[in-house]
Length: 309
Image (cartoon, helix red, strand yellow):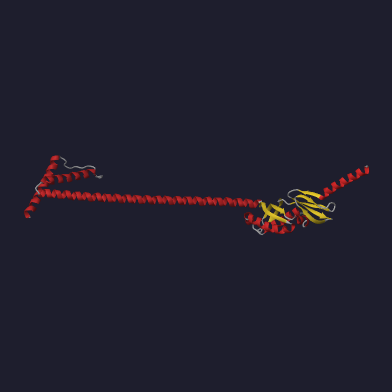
């Protein structure tokens, strides 16, 4: 009886050990390689997997998720002999666990070293200005080269980024001075453009002002000419009316006409700028006598002209 229990216990232990070595549960994001007598046999995918106990063993446990590798800083000489400090990151994913496990001894170290080498090659072919301004072009070139180089290892390089490119301190100082000079130049150009525009606008304003003033003077001159023309017409009509009245024997119209002209002349003499003192007979009797004398002369002249006719 005791032997039977011992047998059952040994059998149970053997079953447990067999299950332990024959049933494998692979977590998500991982792939395990199976080796039979030290040689690669198969790849276990996530989930429950069965292998031959005691013959097949788990070889390498490979993470097939996308992984980020930090590329350490290194000094790089550019094409124009400027030394810069460069670091970066590489994103990669293992597509074939067997090749990643058995085609290269240390995958991550290999990727880091080949990336640093290609960074030196890519930047060494460019000037400092191109290195600082063409970072996207450098990243794209590195991505193509590294993807092709790591393909035999069952790896896909998904992205390469240069994190920092640090030029020497003297170059940084020179670039700062150049940037300051460029900003001052742009400010001077903008200020000159502003002065130019201001002068153009001022000239345009003066031009428009002169045009409007000239148009105003032209309109005033036209109005003055029109007024003088109407005044002349009125004077001609008045003279004609007086002449007709005198021919008809009405001497009072002539007296009124001459008196009006006399008064206007006296008013103009008094309003002249160079008239400081004016002495002339302004008595009413003298004025009437003068007008009467002029009227008699005009009447005699008109009478003689009538007799001749």
